[in-house]
Image 1: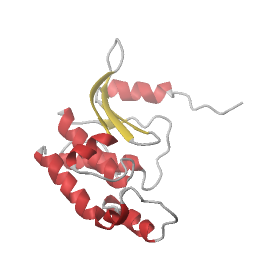
Image 2 (image 1 turned 180 degrees about the vertical axis):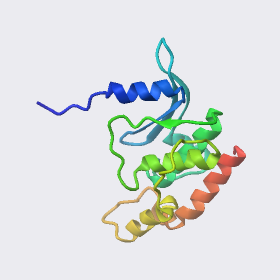
Image 3 (image 1 turned 90 degrees about the vertical axis):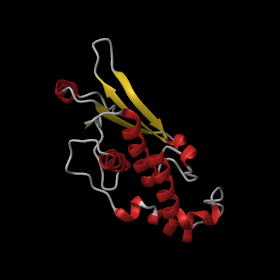
Length: 169
């Protein structure tokens, strides 16, 4: 029988009792999706949501599921949500070093949202996509064919996209 990850209702109840809106982060094959959710007796209510493809409007032309994109999504969600505090609802996941979820939380935190965590572990080099640019140097075949040599300027594009989000462009 396949091992299923089931809801830990004790942990969920603790999150709900806090009364603090929850951040729910999911990664799909193509993107990262982030919700801020509030408990309601009729069911949870999404306060705000962002998807990776929204970053295109702000000038981001790279993958929408990497570390820099996750940070940008967290920042954008903070801007959209108009909440002062959130708590991470990670479900049954164990967070690993450099998890994209940390980058989402760092983006929210840098926007000014209290994320109720002192433990946001991010690598500044990964934040600016240095690991992606280094990987590009050793690529095989047609990897990165969609962005080509633009990947060398990923840090500049990150900063430009963040500015565009801040300015609402």
